[in-house]
Image (cartoon, rainbow, N blue to C red; front, side):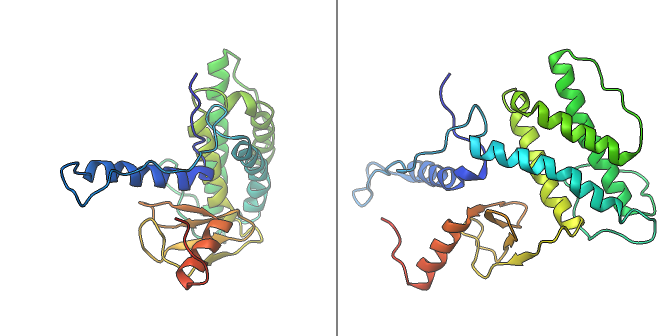
Length: 238
């Protein structure tokens, strides 16, 4: 099997460089003496194993484990009188909302986790889970089960969708649960969409663009290097 690049944010620079190269190739006119043939980017991507690299897989495992804690924090808001912080749901169903937005969020989290467990059980031909008890214990047992089988999940056909959804829900629920972090706006324009929508969540390894049509991610060293370049204190690499 041919080696493929990891689909995680670790390869954001590689994907952007490849996209720029492909656009340059399309625009290249070999009959124009003022143009030189574009050269492919000299960036080696982190390989997927088979979809996510080891670092991104570890991040998914860590974020999945934290969803249990975030659900517990959200339950503290689910009293019917106060709401968790506002935020846009990653995915979910339309319908009548309960008096507690936090309760609805926690319920949708449990449905998402349970849906992935059921999907993987069906892929392996395993029986459906039998659970009882309150929502908190259900989420805990489901998270534990998914973590136990995470290596298999990240090696199957749903690896990319599963990982991206876990990371997306974690970002959303960290904000909803006010989990001891701040989201700080960055003053530099996004190198992808050129909008002032870069933000960094305390403790995260990446600065991300909040523009839904962009979603650019920069590692902290990459962001700091761009700041130095634009401030004129560092020369851009050739």
